[in-house]
Length: 290
Image (cartoon, rainbow, N blue to C red; front, top):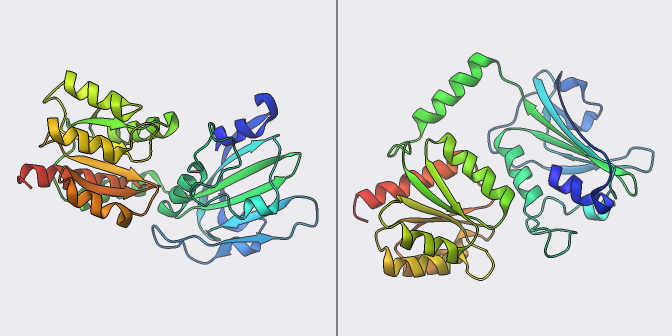
């Protein structure tokens, strides 16, 4: 959200405000956002516009339980703002208004996935020529409840431990690479990263037998993740590869069948739980000689 806010301001000049507060769901100013109970985890949030009576446009994504405490994270800029026509498409994968060398169109798609995964809601308020504000409403949890949720998540995922596993992460987008690196470190993995497939191949050749698994984006300049995996197959036939793609995994199934090193394809945006399960599954199949 902050990267988008920066890019929306001419010559990167303007004001970017980030704030966080706690409030009850019923304190939302938009009745259309409110329901009685928190939705299920990984629900599919619906979007709709509300009338404001002024020159701003408001888009609601998801719902807020009116008797539930929330943590609201807000990111606001004084940039160019968005029209309603643009706002209708902002959460679609690969949609972007940025120059081709500045954006992938996956940033807000990832935000959308995070909202669904955390039972959150998003309120987008934008005025053309004045700026945009994103309010993300996360259901709050007490310290005791949060600790119990983490323990349940750890116990509910079967498979080999990821603690101490060395992962080579291949991702050309710096922000996505950093996010995935932090996620892998929370799993207990040891992480090294490269920003392209050819650099990853060179790195692995210089450090043979050091890595347990390669996690790679599929769509990258010069060499796709699939092409990299095919190249690695010749030198490292036993090294499992997990791909992350904005495309539907079904489109890559045929290519996966031709390369047994590719153990899974995850669709962006990917949740922590799905990533953990894919990594554990790839390592388990490798240990079993699959």
